[in-house]
Image: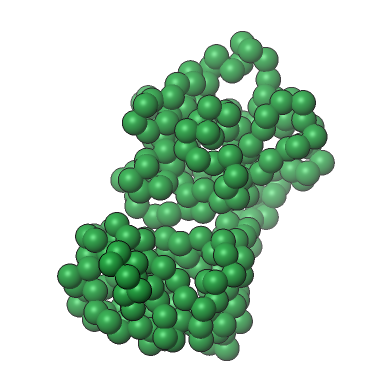
Length: 262
């Protein structure tokens, strides 16, 4: 992962429509900011070092797409609906380093024979599984503890700011595999119909895709930050008993998680 320097321009895309197999739109803000150094022809480089030649084409005044060569790349790496990609641009050699995250929330590596391979650490996954002790079977326990009583919800110190919606959470052990998202935050952040969200833990600029899980059978609203959260929590060394803020940053389209006490 050393090739992904924090200083390099980057953006992410979620595969949410079937057109991603034919072309992919670059974020307008990325093009606006770096368009002067974007060439018409670039290379996409996977984590295994393989490269694909792709053309960047301007469709109209403010829309730019990966076009010619993109379909082959999408087919070779086996892109699927709901997957998540991060692009790091190297201005010196017109190359984008690309990472692909499966719907599990884990980065997957493209092997030399172009078959998707999960990059998660088996040992770490076994440790996490031992801690989580069958999340599906213990869901009733998690729901009871996370929705909790009115008194417990006060410990979350929940607030929503006008510019960027924010909620604050006292991290507890029952948050090890999921975090409950309040309805007002989900509405303000545009997450009511979203399937995937992106977390960051500043100053680390790595993007962490997480799946949003809904519970339609409950009597009250419920959306959880689910698959991907445990890996984010573990890799960023979040500590139980500490307070953290979750701020949806509109300009970046990410949820920044920050420690708010020592």
